[in-house]
Image 1: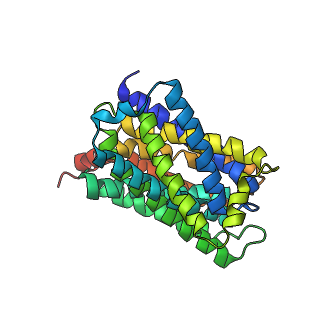
Image 2: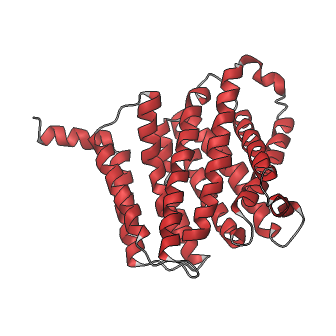
Image 3: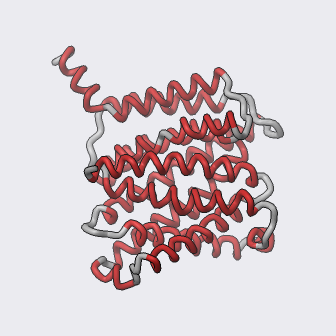
Length: 313
């Protein structure tokens, strides 16, 4: 298997494991505040990542060949993409449910592509704009869906908006890290651990500065919520994150981001089968629009070639 194929496999595995984690977080999310849930998730992930580095015998000496600037960029990426974005994402999950959030998640790919064009000088074409418009239309359609039980339409709209903001921040976090991940031989587990460590420290500082700090830290006391929190944290902060970083390391940012979007398929299936969320016609329309947009963005080069063939002018 060549490098790009390996990266694409990792991107698909990231989508599957992340969807599974969201199902578990939905079970406990309404009883555990998003910041506390995110802090617990990161702490579990950081322990597992540190243990993996010890097992692989990748000590601090492994980083000797990389600059402090690279490490700082990864740390900033972790604060943006893990501490801030994941907290917003978990709040959105509580407000809108997994099915609608999976549609909002489709914004991630256009955000990555646009930010890659702005920050990494990757080329855009008309399919990106059209595909992005279809995805936005799909998200707007999902926001008009009836609110989940116990939620108002205003809460649904706010949840969709916050979910969109979270997607933008996750995209920004990985795009600014992409040049560092491209550096020759930068280890995936160390890159993941640095981001997780920075995100956990930031969340710890945020929680300690809050009047609700006791409530936030009480999540570390053993409770029945751990039945969902621990496996969800392993999936989200260990497996999904490692697969996600590896996908971006071994293939192009735009390709990895598109394959990550298959989360929408996995999440909708799990939301319907496991969480018993209704799969309505409006959700179907939103998914079709979003998936058409994703397909157009994914295959933008063939689309441009077809248009140039039939309309050479």
